[in-house]
Length: 240
Image (cartoon, rainbow, N blue to C red; front, side):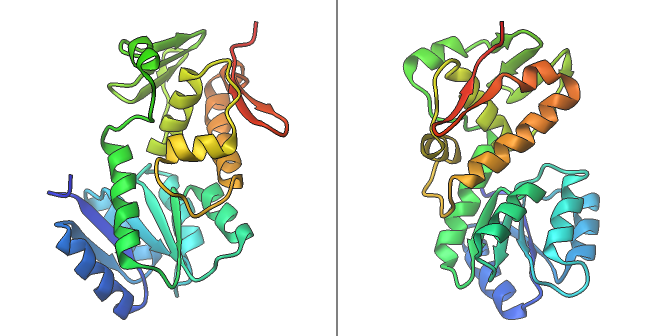
């Protein structure tokens, strides 16, 4: 996975950049650096980047703004790196489009593991599923106005391919694979995020909201398939 995989490291502290570059290059990642948001955006627009590690508190264009601007033209995985650990900051990061969140001080080895987990999801790994789900989705899942193709990681709404981040796609796929079943937030964190996640259940709420918004742009009916079960979690159900 690491060969020819480029990580863009956006961090204003040279000591942290140097340390992370060392650990990432030990895993055979190609590392490109930027000290703040403006050059990072130019790098993303001009070349191939597979994942962004993004500090929040930077001079110039800060991480919040940079994350939002990246999401205007790219679905590249974004891992936020920051000293701000308050729940409201984590939720805002996810609302702006981040895929994961690591709080300083951190273990470089843990950060590398999270990078690998995000890249596995981006490459092709679908959420965990049982044998029955495997057979049912081999040739795609089809609902009124919505089709999902796991092998190509493609979602089609009313004949139009929907632009989803890898995490959003995995979330939609897992919900659809378990249509009619109430899925708790903790279960979704375990099955969709796929590793020990240092966050909270509001992370799921934020991603479900973003997913519904994207679905609504093409079909409000399809967006309504993702229902909230108050006090329990979420359920994918095609309305009669």
